[in-house]
Length: 191
Image 1 (cartoon, rainbow, N blue to C red):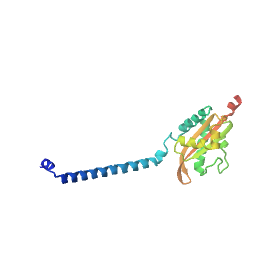
Image 2: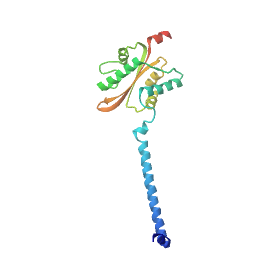
Image 3: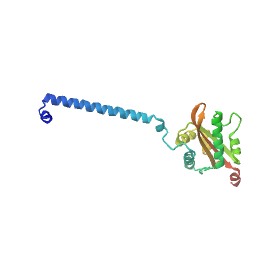
Image 4: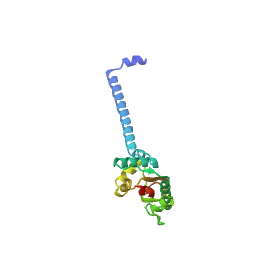
């Protein structure tokens, strides 16, 4: 009879059972803690955790960029289809020709892409980035770079085209971001 046996345990048997039970509980708790610590550090150092923030797409990049412009008392930039085409053409050119520079190996400058898209401008600028995971990270790094920041916060620009393109760069997967800034000639003439 098990129930009779339970009541008939000696003090030694009771102590032994309690000690075994306590060791088992301590081992169980230790294992749970180890699992939690491993999960914590895995999450902390995973690419997904590091890339927390707005997605990296043209809409998110424009939203984050315009938040900074407004914070500094500037008007928000307006997305422009022709500048979008220019930015997309530049991103594609970078990936197809394996370079990362404002001037292509063939000598094409940012302004050539803008003109080829049919945008007539008075002022223009370009920002390039590679392998960013989210819009906030990209914007923060651009704001910490004097030349990129100058384009982001220039009162001369009121339009933008943004391309975020995945592809292969020098044999590895890559994400290229191109921002083309400009003001059309008629906007400048009207001011």
